[in-house]
Length: 67
Image 1: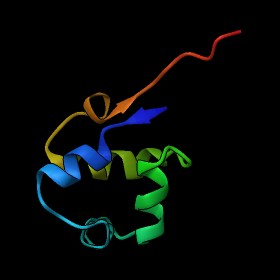
Image 2: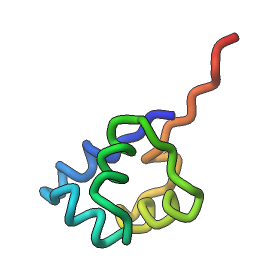
Image 3: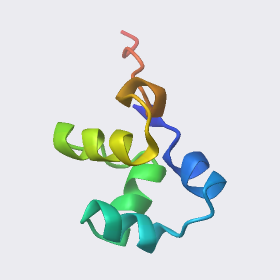
Image 4: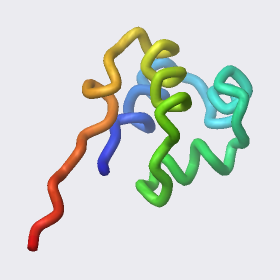
């Protein structure tokens, strides 16, 4: 799954640590999300979407796996 988290965070001029504090996760979680190494829980995805005042689908892009 791809996401626009880094792009959106940088547009707002906030650091990973600041976003992590607001979302009540570690900075490492934000870093892993931005690098695509971690998919968020549904609760975290909703918190992120609410923070950016967007839908989950506007932030997280699901890509079907190719067989």
